Image 1 (cartoon, rainbow, N blue to C red):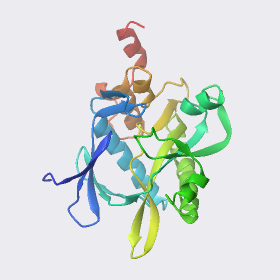
Image 2: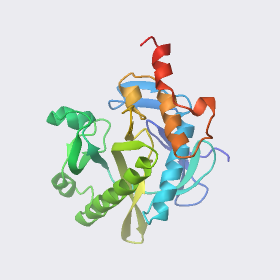
Image 3: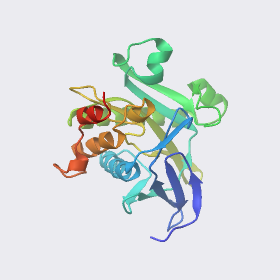
Length: 259
């Protein structure tokens, strides 16, 4: 497909003008960032893997009635999506204490939470995506109360589905980030799932070993990032069994690094 006009470039993806009005082409990069882009790097093949993984998950969510921006995958790194008006609120869904939650509340990482927790952050790289409450969202008009009810309901529904999906392949869904957008029908706006769902925005731990199969390997300088992403794709059935480059061997990776 011929390259079209660039609309937006983020840390992990580029958006291009789509072939039809109301569509965009979403391109997945290999760039990796952490701590609000204070740490930068590259994970070879990450864009290809995230494109496939996100396509797979969004397709399954669509089959259970979750509205999404995904239309179809175009090639190894691009997918056709609906153009949406992004709600400037990042939604974090937490099942297990990890990351900033552990640090903020002094809870040991890996502790099962008594219930799923939903947290919100204002989507702003310049401000470091500060945490916000429903009161902030309502006061500044980032979303209506009805929209936030829809977002919370969809987040819980997505979490229930993904917990089962990943548990079936031996992976613990610790937490993940979601973004939502509006599509308009005249004056009526409807909330749908946008962005991506991949190891870039999920914490995924092996159920037996607690090995991290997500971007925390990059954040924490653990190495083996590409192998971890490949393993998630392999367990989801998106990479052939038995391929040398599609098998996770973090023990071998540690030995190679002299650990």
